[in-house]
Length: 165
Image (cartoon, rainbow, N blue to C red; front, top):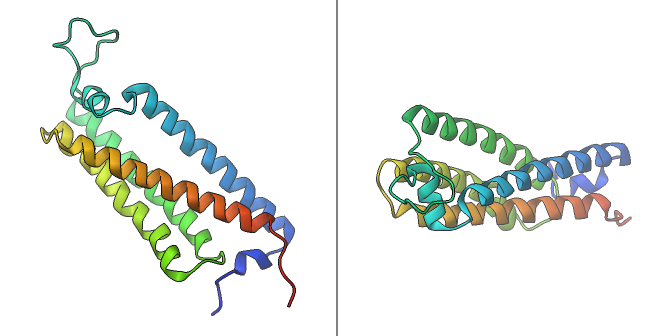
């Protein structure tokens, strides 16, 4: 079955539907990143403070307390489930665009590893492995990069005119 570039052959109504989905999905994804920036300042110390609290810092502008086990399990559980679903759907679309197979493989498999490292890392950080804050930042950045690249290439190929042969 030939699927490389299949997305470009879809009728314009289906392309519009897929494009609307990718745009709205992207808005949701980047809104989540804005929330992460708001709660952590996108810094290793901010990540640690967000999950372990800052009760010992008397000069803190906002007092934060260590998250409970229930809060951590809820955060990890919901994010791993929802992010894996997001990347499954986006990955399905990536397999239908025209790109080299190795790049598609990277764009569709890497996000699952990043989801595991990011949210598993958050739990391990909360459990006391403080160096995980760096793994969380690196995997989160890589997850964002793959999401962005995938969404942009999908949208580009949706609006690009299909070459007639």
